[in-house]
Length: 356
Image 1 (tube, rainbow, N blue to C red):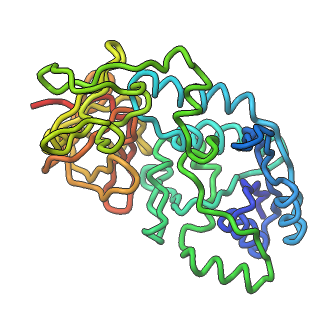
Image 2 (tube, one colour):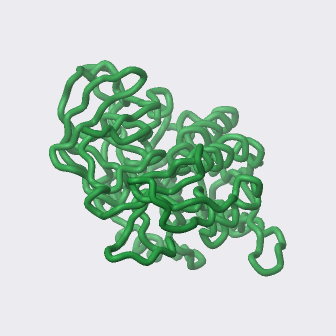
Image 3 (cartoon, one colour):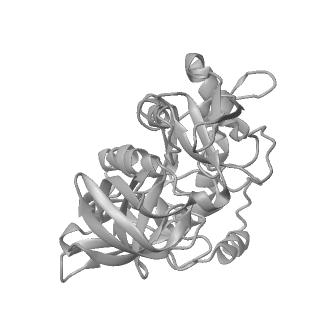
């Protein structure tokens, strides 16, 4: 019987993960990380996460609950990187870094201190051990509509060896019904926001409060360098953006490039957003000894897109990914994740488009 620490948020997924593991006979306790405080948009009053509600859920299931303050570490890793990336003209995905450093980093360490052999989360993904290569593999969750393997590509072998995904074979609708059967009633919560630490998703306000000196107007230019208008501040824009440019033109204009060094936004036609090749840095392979260059795979350049066929080759300090067909809005700072069917091979951070 394993002693398992469940990363508990008080939502449907983590609650069911804890319930399922307990019913399987495991010794279970829950850990919640206090990572940040939200501010009320009107009063400015600090709003703490509802940990009392989380404790109530744990009490109802009959498992202990531990609350750990992780604000300083979260600030120095996830939030610092989030701001730095935007000020470098990139569009980061903070969930990917949070998973590696916080949920499967700090939380795993704390779980071990409290005697756990594994941590469990409410992610829709699968971990398997490959006896042939003696390495752990990461696979998609069975519920493809909820599959979250895209956000887990930075995990290493140690983290996967000590991780359980109880929802690997589950479907969201079945989980909700199962909790009702056990008379576990959760407060209505919206689906997790893409940027959980920013109230109302107003990241522009967040960046301005963090570094007001970096928020300056600049020029919007076309690919010829001709000035078409003025932008509010380059960190407020992302590749492929159409709305909010404030430019009148004969045809729709989209953000093609962000140039922080000159404080310029380059815009152009939609067809100019399409590219076949990208360079990726900070690459992580889930099972490194199974990778042999060059190789073909399927790649996703953002969470809510379908994977596309590509060729992967090695490059200095990274990889080159060449798609069979041009892809729209390849965005620096976002994750590109490589798949072989259900298997997650690994991924990297998109550094730039490679123009042919």
